Length: 420
Ligand SMILES: Cc1ncc(COP(=O)(O)O)c(C=O)c1O
Image: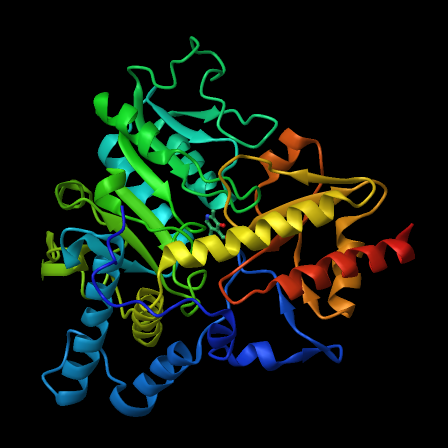
């Protein structure tokens, strides 16, 4: 499944990687920063920060518009980013890559446009019970607009899809003849579960169902090959993959993108405009109305070039080692329960502790320089499924270390002494 093995990769050395992230030298409350909130947003290597500011300092101009030199350079830099992303996820064509402001925008584009193209009264859209609100609400809106029904794959106690038990359907029958769209996350932001998306996509395809994957939590941690997965659409954000905020991608299969109507109108997405009728630009511009986040897209391209320098399998192994160590040490704490114990996980660990509110624990960890996320992680239905109001979540990236995991465990123990 690896699509990035041809170039020579740098050997994985966590200290060498850490040296590239300026923010890791910051102190928080006088303590060295331990950043374990990578699922919310990852930190950025110097190269990415430089690429973004170099655009403003040297080639700032609008893209695809001017004949002047700066506009040409800005256009070339943006389109180079598109090609970098294409290679990274093994899309067939550069025009299969649509730039958006993030996963949320990508899924809203997909739901709005696919809704218009495919959904009629009584049709069904299938999602799973572990989806981020960004992969629930846009589909709810589309279903409401077109009179369709949202169906939800339940979640097992370990935090995996329970494919045998869709409410109101026969066992082992995830899809009915009314199912039009399957929209599922590749990796859960709350549980860390790596879902068997390829398998379910293959099932969906047999029935002509369009498949949409929320790859927000996968793109920085797994080798993502969209052709191998066989999905129709794949969404992710730049800022969770070492790139700038305000950037994202919707990959789409060319023939589907050709059929999908645009979701936003404006400059750059048109061919000819008259007051009677407008015709649209070719891909990908049909879906990119208005001036894009050019600096961010250039930064996104640099982030993906940076990721290409390393072997993602080695990075995944490092993050898995952190996960295993954290799991073992945290489970030894009295009253601590991990939410999300699937066999296949990325470096995300969510936990609750008897008698302790996650917000209080998160605040005490912050006092020790340790950044974790607390709350429902934009997965309220999943919190309901596990009967909790929120969790404390540590999420790892390639620059995290075993010593930092030890600091987290010590920090939790210290916090508990104050809270219990
Ligand atoms: C699984 C998942 N989907 C979607 C999103 C939304 O991403 P963004 O806020 O970058 O649009 C997130 C963000 O945490 C996520 O984890």
